[in-house]
Length: 488
Ligand SMILES: Cc1ncc(COP(=O)(O)O)c(C=O)c1O
Image (cartoon, rainbow, N blue to C red; front, side, top):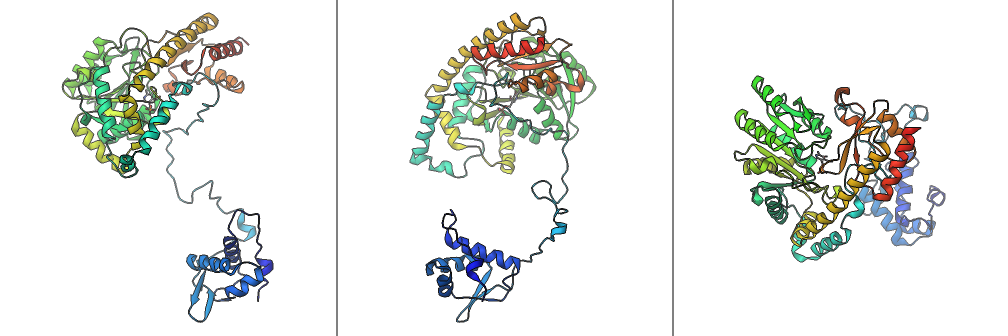
């Protein structure tokens, strides 16, 4: 008989149940070869006495081993170590170092996608000129209350199941009303497809609408993640200049005369990254070119609700009579990026294709969150919140721009943005923005190096500086640090 008492060590303080400690020890000895396949195991009563445990504990340990296939029981003969154990090839110690470390390297080949960079650490826990809304202003209480109310309802049980891939009807309906009301769109809920953020909208539209070698016109420079989404599908980017009136539509026309264009991607409200607004005249021209040459306008209106001057120019989608515009929006800036709620506004036949495609990637969104947000819209909370943050961000924009003009006006050139949450800042050519970003990072202040906007090295020494993230005190501190680091 094996020295079971010394083989099986039971630790009373362990969180692991005693019967599992016993079964794990026995598995270890079988794997080690100390207990051979086919060997007869002692009965549970004898083992219980040896190990000083309750008989039931021993029965549970054997049951576990039987269930996992390490033991087999033969009626009226007893319990045996299974003859059909999985093959175990112990690694010789001398070879152990040569073995692949599973956590580092896959044992199969992986096609390295070099067009998509490794995700940057977001560093949002550190203060800085982050692009995006200040999460401290998120209406947490209201969200919490509404989410609890939705969760507690019997009628919400359905949300735990598979639901409609186009998104929650209530949210599609309120968004349709909201977009018609605020942006002059003419939609019904059937034109709205809810996504997990507008990035997913761009990705799905790319998957459904673009083919390899299709030409997509984008600005120079453009929203980096849209560029790589199109390229990842095999589409070819054709860049056109962007000036103070937005994307150059005459350059687009010249290209259309020479070759077939499948789509034009624009962020007309505030061009990403330079923040300029596409003029009304250029919008009309772009729309008529789309009708004439049959290209899709992909209008990414990520920050429409953030406009500080006069009323914003209505989106291209609001004057689209021929169904050339696909409109993408998001609640990431209005409420919070982590909600992952965005939407696509499109003709019904395209919505159907998106619904079909979604079955392949995530089936559906988050019906609880979608229902919650729909109810917050209906209760007027979202509009109240927007009014509040718009006022706050307006003040923060003015404050930050004043500070920057005062302290850094000689080395940073920028125009006060009409809207959005960022300033497009051009640094003096003597200053390397990536070096500056690294120095500030060491002092716990984040500023984007601007590298993602620097297409082919053409946009030098510029970056987006988010102003919404910091209150006045923080902005003062950040600009002082920026000033001191530059002056050094
Ligand atoms: C121009 C533009 N489009 C799309 C997105 C994606 O936003 P989300 O996926 O959070 O809706 C962003 C995010 O910052 C953006 O700046």
